[in-house]
Image (cartoon, rainbow, N blue to C red; front, side, top):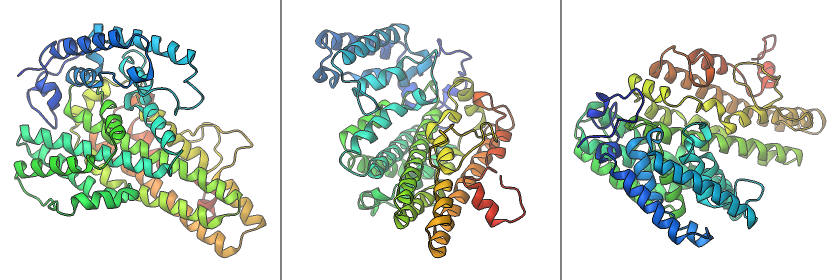
Length: 458
């Protein structure tokens, strides 16, 4: 069965002849030309007839699946003009309706799921990193969940669901192809989910319960067995998370191309973004704890953050399965959607220590002069009210976090060299050179200088 490519700029038909790594996604491979657009448009118009008042009960009945199927089949940038136009009109109408009933309040926790999803579907001309991966939807979910349980639990639940969906996607692709590259990708995704407790420890028991009987993946070539095991494990894990989480994960997979590799790429950066958000939240909690002279709490929070960052290599191992030519296509179609726009990543930097504006290639968000950073609060407490033993313990865990953070940046640099080489990066950066310089910047320069007297802090 063919795939639709006529609207795709600089189409890559040779790559779309195969499924899986380096080729088409299973969604694109199964798409009938124009069929998904007609189904999406029909479902959307029928829903509009029922939901003319745009009441909350109507919003919950939105035909997400028909729209998602179309976007995955052809790529977000090649979505049918008629479908995109209908969604733009709905976006404008819904914004007015929600404003009128005052459901849109300050913060991303307000407003409907649909209101937060629509900007993803109509960002073909002005999309950025956050509409690319659906940040607003994830932030909305986490903030709502934080009202009734620790936010870290909600983040871990989402991360594990993302890993499970990634594995299911790779397992389905392996069914279609016996390629060695697809086997290696699926194996890496399988190991990621089996070891997910290192990245999402509060979900450890849930994953252990369903994976205890799952076979260990050894080197081999039995793609059928690996595909079956992968899809089974993924389904069992996804059955453990709430419907709202499964929907969240499902509707935020809107690739801009038809390439299978982009689906892996999106899932990985969604997991990374969740981790960055967790670390940033941990820094905020550690600052508050130190300001309240709760050094034990600050140390525990930072130890948890460091352990998660130290576990990032298992996620990078999935990313390294990306062929260079596939990423070149993805990069050419995602201008303006660079990860350097990540708010959570920049927040980690800005919460850690004061930064000179423009100092170094990895610019942190500017903070007001009165805003606390972990380094400044730590130094103030050391000077006035903290014992040497307590100060030493905190310094050790801060250095551990710093080392893990810089190690992850060096790994990112290495992956970038492998996948894109030395070509310029997205967002106007110098690519790998940019990441190499960023990897040398310490989260806590004062502690780095203290650890190495007479050397310039980075």
